[in-house]
Amino acid sequence: MRLSTKGRYGLQAMVDLGVYSKERHISLKSIAERLSMSENYLEQLMALLKKNKLIVSTRGAQGGYALAKKPEEITIGEILRALEGSLAPTDCTCKTNTIHCALDGKCVTKSVWEKIRDSIDKVVDGITLDQLMEDYEKINENASQTYYI
Image 1 (cartoon, rainbow, N blue to C red):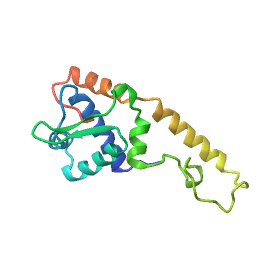
Image 2 (cartoon, rainbow, N blue to C red):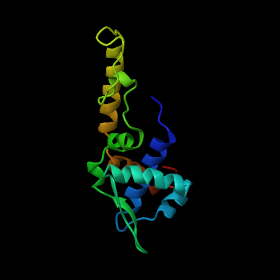
Image 3 (spheres, rainbow, N blue to C red):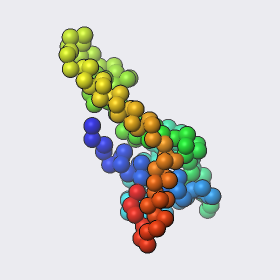
Image 4 (cartoon, rainbow, N blue to C red):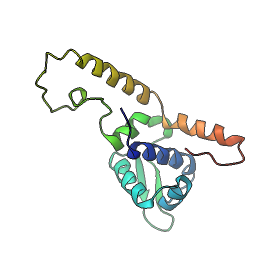
């Protein structure tokens, strides 16, 4: 499995949002500047995250984005699935599979793909946004420069 920029950048944006939106909503522009990302691309990612109820937005001068839930209630798996779709390595092992394989029931490798899918799910669903935020703060605690998320 290889994540696209949607998954990588979106996860970075969620960590940034979690770290900086504790007191107030954060503007798209400030997130884009901190992460050196295009505002237009980031806006597309935020739309997906909002659609999946992981973030909320507010319009106006004091508006911006904030997490929709507590960081400890958001898993990395939720974020990645919101941005990437299924994390299954093959279409036939996608949990929302509607594709029927010609080898259905006779495929000797399907169990391998299912084990890979289940292992990926276990890892990403076992890590919370809060844990990444803590890691970010530890890295930056003693640093004289800002580290990339």
